[in-house]
Image 1 (spheres, chains in turn blue, purple):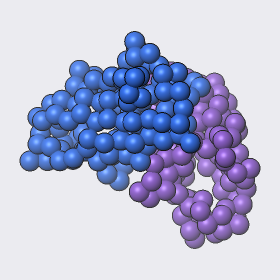
Image 2 (spheres, one colour):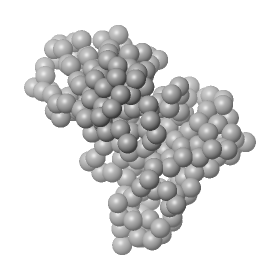
Image 3 (cartoon, each protein chain N blue to C red):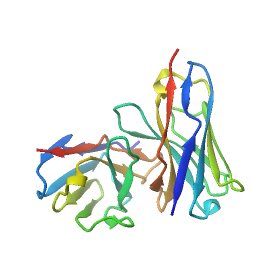
Image 4 (cartoon, rainbow over the protein chains, first blue to last red):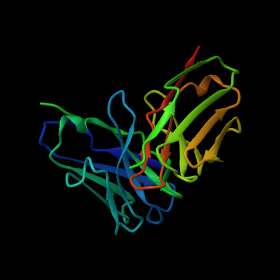
Length: 118
Length: 107
């Protein structure tokens, strides 16, 4: 059974940093790209970042480029999202998702809430 | 950047009725379109990929159609557990993008 478990969310002040983690199991992690998708309270889904299976290629939404860094450790079956210079508009539930086919998302974690507030 | 529009914003139906949800792209996405279902306080779930292929474990009452710029998700007969928000998503061009969603609620 595929499982994705996010952690690392919480309350952070504007300008602060957080690192999210997503531990994967139930599939050959090193064979799949992974992504982060966020959802602001009461809003829709926004793709944030992606990383290739080997970690050699990374992708970012324009809204977070230069601010967030995605990485992965295939020996630990874990993908990370380092978030710096956080702003109120980064407040959201952050989901990690397994990439399938032509960049669709076939499995999702339960999400971790990031709240940016003084 | 491709923009996806979903209609209607809200669809009020009764269990057993047929639901037809629309997703329109600002330019052709070929068949690179997926549909997701999201229930309150839950993660999204992939329903349909490549416009018309059901994902693993998805009941046959869910079907997708379309290509180019116009796509449809059809739920042939609504079950109580189908009342949720539905999002379309394209990956024809970078970055991947989601539509704003259609909420299917109980009439």
